[in-house]
Image 1 (cartoon, helix red, strand yellow):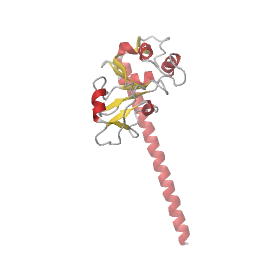
Image 2: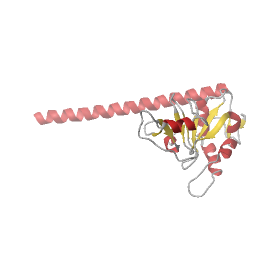
Image 3: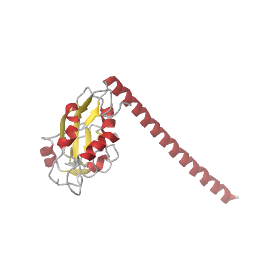
Image 4: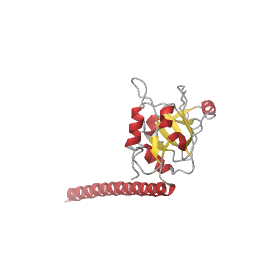
Length: 205
């Protein structure tokens, strides 16, 4: 729709120009706790592999570790989390107000308010952006995307009005997918009910 970073009529900017800050999570292996009532959510790259934050399978860290980590970086709703270790180059929007911390395998990107977050999320997940990430992977064995390379990554930046229009289209598409999934689930449940009723009726004859 808007071209690629090396073939477009719109401005092209680096993620560093569009964000403040871009930081990764703690580099220390955390101490986990089973006390979910008093502990704090702790996310890593495994929690964004679907391009959405998976809040259903979290780890927890104790309050004293959270207090230490939150002094350096404190994620919030509207931030984008980018997988930078292992599975790399996949981004997810923080879609709820919840206190949590992140591991080094995630980078936090906080875009300037004049950008549409839904559009930027889509731009980061575009194949041409992923190609830039893949071309800058470091290390042997487990792929690692350094913060310096993330900051230099380029994306197309159309006017905010067009970003908003694009985001609305994406949102409507998401709603349509959910509606279709619900319809399929309802149809499946109805089919099972009819089959069960027919079996009961046949058994009475």
